[in-house]
Every structure is written in structure tokens, then in C-alpha cells.
Length: 249
Image (tube, rainbow, N blue to C red; front, side, top):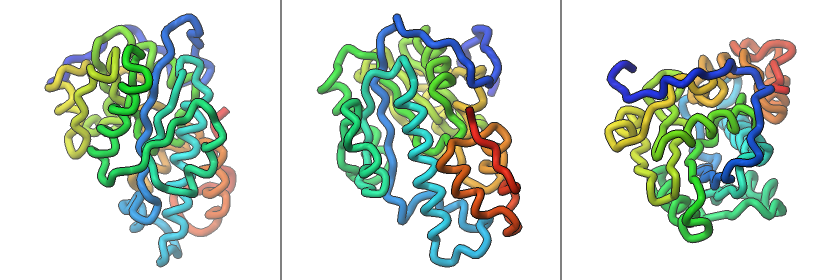
């Protein structure tokens, strides 16, 4: 990732006991979550005994809800724009006054744009971030830490663990964001003026698309919903589903 403009500030470890900053401006975080029927298709090859896709859908739902739980527990987050039309996700969050729901227009790019537009309408001068909903190892403290790193820049991007995709995109206001999600999005975001936060905590970079990604997330410690789904896989021969999957604290 030497081609990227990078943040060289000293970063702490991936520990979940990250400092909280309650005196900083609160962020609006946009989280797109697609319909579960088409979610996480790359998990199919590694999931045992799941011809109908029920396990894949259950994991996708768990990833999204664990991610959203982390976002809502972050002290630097003031509002969440959830772009989704998935009832099994929406039903869990409708009662939270901090969550604004925007119907999914279809496709990640359109969903991100719709979420940013709503953020700009509701809180035009607030810091804004787009966070993908497949970070089951994320915690509120780690998100606070990562947003703290991002706040030093007008625009920033957190590359995923592989260094090519994007897990988090930030701007000082919604209008500062230059979203370019899709293959090779990290480099595209840097080219658009977002500074790559290469030293962001691993929990903020560990998205899950494959079973190997899931193993890595379990090693960090996943949220309770993901851990619950994985507990049902113990003894079924899937890598990354030990008898006691790691749960984040």
C-alpha cells in the first residue's frame, strides 16, 4: 500500500479498551445493509450443509447487527443512517431514536449515495462516515478510536484487511465524501482525496466476505450475534467455528 497517501500518526493496538472522546463533535454514520437473500454470496463455498442458504443469511444478519451494535455504542456517534429494506435487520433497530432508516434503492453505490444525501439533509455540518455492515469484530471503542484518527483529515478512508477494499470512509461534512465503493475502492478513494488510515485498528479493517475472513474475525473476537450463529457450527467441520468462538468484550 505504498502508493497511498497515509496517516502516520501513532496508533494504539486493537484492544477494545480504547479511549472515548465525549467532547468531540459527534458523527453521523451511514451504514448500508443489503437484503439478506443476496448477501455474502462468497461465503457459500465454505459453509457446510447450507444448500438453501439459511446459514449464509443468518451470518449476514449477525454481521450487520453486531456492526450496528458497535456503532450505536460508540460515544462519538450522534446519529445513524441505516440504508436497508431488510426487515430482519430493521425490526431490531426501529425503536432507537438515533437511527434513521432510508429504503435501499438497490446496489451499494446507490445505497451509499442515498445515505449521504439523508445525512446532508439531517445534519449538514456534522462529520460523516460511511461504514460497511460486515465488521462483526468491531467495537464501539475501536470505532471511536478510528473516527478520532479520521478527524485529523478533511477526508479519510480505512482500507480493509486485504488493503484493496474499504470499510470506512469519512469526511468533515457529508458533502466532503467522495464515495467510490466496489473493486479496488481503497485506491479509488485515495485518488479522490481521502487519506488512507493504514494504522487503523485491525477490528475496523476486518470485513468478512469469505470463510477465511470469518476465521480471522473470530480470532479477534466477534460480536454476540455472530458468536451465537457460529456456536451452532461447532463440530460441523467448518474452519473458524471452534467449540467456543471468541466473543468480543
